[in-house]
Length: 615
Image 1: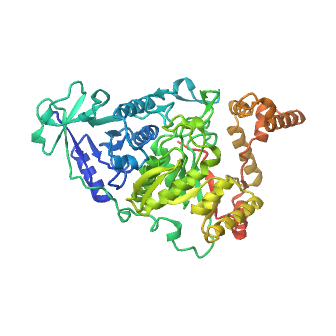
Image 2 (image 1 turned 60 degrees about the vertical axis):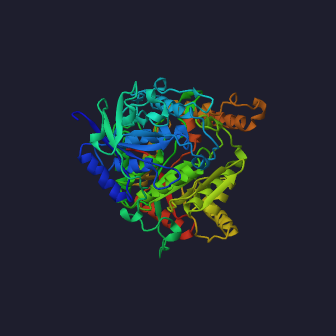
């Protein structure tokens, strides 16, 4: 048996036992462990478990089973790339391909083409290669964060689905996640590790073959390793196994005796908020950066750490947009890893209702809530963007005016699943037949400020974000939301209001204003200013120019302003673009202003963008 590699399939009845078993396999020198998963049996999703274990182990490979038939291929590739980043290059993927009609029904599918598994593996590999290793260049002189020529579309098309790419997450540390699968899948040439029945012999053309055995003595000659099977128990981690908040939603917590200011930080992971031109800007995708930020916020008694969602890398005129930070990890995967590194801060994942399956997303969110000890949140967003839809099975399928109708049905289905109920739906907006298995409802956040978004918040949210930061607008928003809450039979204080805001502090008001002006200049580089104006180019779009009166009027007003003040293009964009700082002053000045907001009852706190990641 000299040179034989060892692996194990590991499951356990609770999170603490699972962690002990995986660490024991690591200490014993095992190459990797696989984490089984069955969408029908419930339990914590294997990908979320792997991300949590990534921060509790140091060397062993972690390979969750993720099914090609019950997950969007783009999400699957993003999740696994995020796992590889969180584990610093130890991710594997056991390819699952359930064709069980009941499992397919949970995501509204009646059947699946057997050839689809090969398509999903191919597109995942293509997406992992869509970022070259040196795509991020951080060229301060030219204002280019990345080189668009090194970030590629995949343009994958098959009779079953299409994905345009590129991946939202930069290239995994390994380059390619290790792909593991059974010989019975019939895709041996696409696998890095083949799991085979010893009685069938070694499959031809396989690079590494592991024998599935109960005892090492059963491994025949010619095999590279063995994977020992554990009893197939469903892993159902207990919230009690992890320290954390004693309750999983605001409604379960006692009301505070006095008004408290709730603070969150939104780490978008992309866009102009991150000031990457600083020489001490940290690696924006490295797990250590996220750990540092989350622990700092936790030490500062912040309530929550929010991660943004990426469904497609931003482009301008068909080319990847290079001035801004781009590339971010899968939010749920990253937060599951952070759950292992923190103890009490809330962990909130932004997730879209348009391009997810309700049962799949509800299970992943409940899994995050379980491994974090009841600290998970879901920031509910929606879109009708057909450009984004090019990465998903259904494409741009949702009419703009129905996006919140879909979101409402989606959230109602998710809440029923978290109650353990069976949900059956067959409409043009929602199709599924699933039963909930993890009673671990996360805190629900809602970020839309349109009438549809406000209505969704009034029906279902625990916390709502708004763009209304000024006291007058915040008061009007709060009054409108409370009227809507009353119409749905909810208490006036059933929803916490956290406007998006930014803070710039200085020892004096003048110093704070100087810092704020510096931030605006850093955010509005020359290339960004040009790109901002290009989005208003009246020659773009599908409507005839003569019908775009709104754009033409705005352009005319800006030209007049530039001429009147003798502004350069950059200075004009700084003057007219949104994003000016909300609170600028000394700590005492801002604390006094916050107190006024609280006393007037117009907000419960604020959610701030994270701007600078120091190395």
